[in-house]
Image: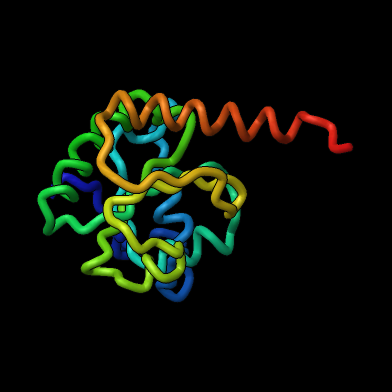
Length: 156
């Protein structure tokens, strides 16, 4: 599988109490010694999605798709390629709705694949359908710029 595993068992002596883990921290993207985010999208569960949305921090780009479909597999590949260009700007996450159907309900998604760009736990842009890696990068950058512009524009 191409996704980076994010669910790790608590190691003995790891400093965690009671063996409990925080799904939001698991899905948040582990940083290496240099502080760089991982280049590849992380696969999350519906429980981790709920925790991330409740936490409401950071900018997330979520690929909601069905990996068992041809379009889903195509989008997964393009999303993975786009992650290399976007990794410093957003957390790249994927969720498979066949394995985690509650995610589609929670995100109000009814077409697959769908990209959702979230900032502070709120959707700021959505796109349904397959896009090339270049289109994903351009769409994301434009949506972030539009959101920033909207925040700076004084309201009448």
